[in-house]
Image (tube, rainbow, N blue to C red):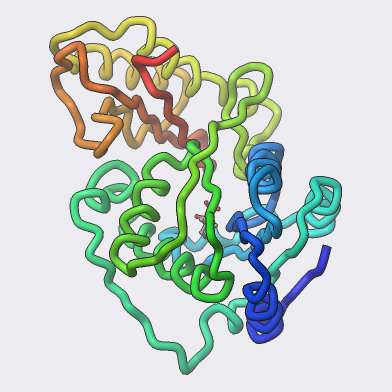
Length: 283
Ligand code: PAF
């Protein structure tokens, strides 16, 4: 695996690679890699001729300084995992490489409704920061395809919107969430959980399965409230438990029994914010 730290170096490499008829697959990450990330590398390796991963803890997408400072960094282990997965190129830039002093910005992005709901409401500025870094990474890497995890359901929709806004030709592939054997969605933030919190963390996926089992056409308020109460009684500080149209994330109070639904949860277990989601009416 070739490791590039400088934008100019990876850009030169990519300009040369683009002269071949190869296909570039790109997996942007913030490191602290787990099997979920590796499944994205594997998805790229099946169809692309060059798989590029980036590791960059993007300061502009953290609306909470403590969260940024405590974001896990496990770079040696990450490099080892990427090597073993057969990743071809790692881009490991500094903040100055991504945000040089003389760089222009396209902020704010006109993301519309998608930025006002769910994490957009609870993490103001977060998706602007995600778009800011992803646009810069797309400009540098020029991938044919970008691979994202369904665990960040709203982020996938935001990045889709970004590619439309900037008229990027990059195709987006959303890969399924990988889970631990007890159902907990794999996430870099899980590393921050104490052993006691780790046991409690499965409540989030339990709630999503509960919604899947219990959902019936009609009013959804009672079902959502039961989930919020359950998590609160388990010691969570709940941002939201919501059920939305899976195609556009419009939050639903009533279900017609037909619309494809996604249930989404975001809740704090002490300092660690966990998110997860599940398509409700699908096997
Ligand atoms: O999902 C993430 O890890 C980040 O939000 C991303 C897409 C790498 C942008 O910093």
